[in-house]
Image (cartoon, rainbow, N blue to C red):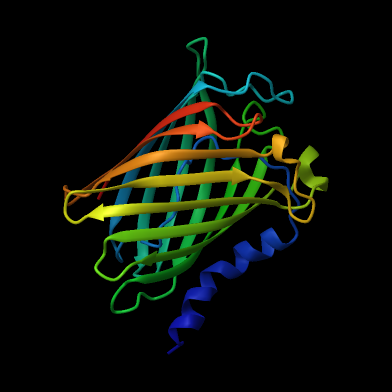
Length: 262
C-alpha cells in the first residue's frame, strides 16, 4: 500500500502539469471571497455552499470587454464531495446580477483539494487546492484561468484562536494575460472562537501583481473584511462579513455571505 504522503500527491499530478506551463493575468476573485481553513468533507460526504457578495461601492472602470465591478452582485453555487478523508472535489457555478438588473452566467470552475492527513490534535492543517476556470469575457477577458492555493492553518491550544493563510498563485494559460508572470494573491484569516457559538475576526485578500515584479501599491488590490462565523448549527455553516478596500485600485465596500449545508 502507498504511504499517505505518496497517496495524496497522486490526484494533483495532472493538474499541476497544466499549471506549470501557465502564465497569468490577475485580479482578485470576485466570486469566491473565502479563506480555506484546511477542512474538507469526510469520505462519501457531500456538501453545498451558496456564496453571495455585493460590490456596494467599487471600481467604475475595467479593461474591455470586462465589466466594471461597481454595483455588481455575485451569486455562486459550490457543490463538493469527499472522495477520501484527505481528498475533496468541488465546482463553482457563477452568476451575476448587473447594476441594470440583468442576469448573467459568469462561468464555471472545477477544483481538487488535498489535505495532509490531520494530526490527532487537528491543530495544524496543511493542504493545497488546484482550480481551473472558464469564464465569459465580460468577467475575465482571458477566458481560461488556473489557481494554485496552498493551505496553512493553525488553531491555538485551547481552541480560542484560529489562523489560516493561503499564498495563492493565480495563472492564465491563454488570452492577453498569458504573457505575464503568475500573480501573487495572498489571503488570510484570524478569528477568536467562542466554542459552540461563533467565531469573529478578520479576513484579508490581496492581489499584489506579477511575482517578481509586484505592482506599485496604488495599483494593488487589497481589501480587509470584518467577519462572523456561526458555529452553533451542526450541519449549517454561515460566514458573513463586510469589506473595505485599502488602496485606490480596490473596491471600496463589499458585503458577503456564505451559507453552507452538509
